[in-house]
Image 1 (cartoon, rainbow, N blue to C red):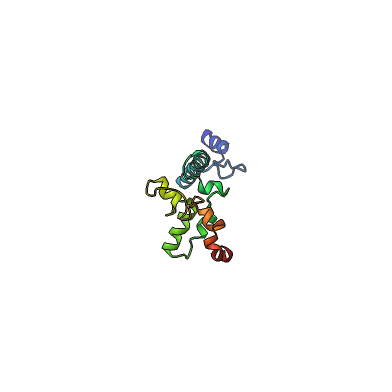
Image 2 (cartoon, rainbow, N blue to C red; image 1 turned 120 degrees about the vertical axis):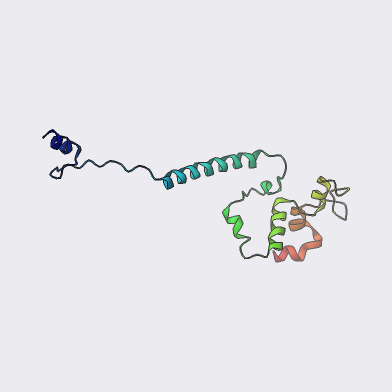
Length: 137
């Protein structure tokens, strides 16, 4: 009798109207997903802090655009050599005088006619030698 009363109290008796539902223990997949999400958020937060604080490589930062998943869409279906050039242009780490001078591979950062530093912005937007290409862009 005591056995039946105990089963009824816990909801395991077949005649019992109340069934006590115990929560399922969390699956390992849930714990892994939560851990991955937390790690991703932490890395993202640290990246943003570093992106804003670092003193070198500010070419892309000056354009006020943060790299994101949409940035990667630029590279889909693009030949690897073109993709490399796009990345070099975006980061400013390309064989222009400003970069070459910064790594001690050029005597000056100025362009061939010696008036302006040869930067990505200058070549893409300002240089008179590339006006046809600038209009096509």
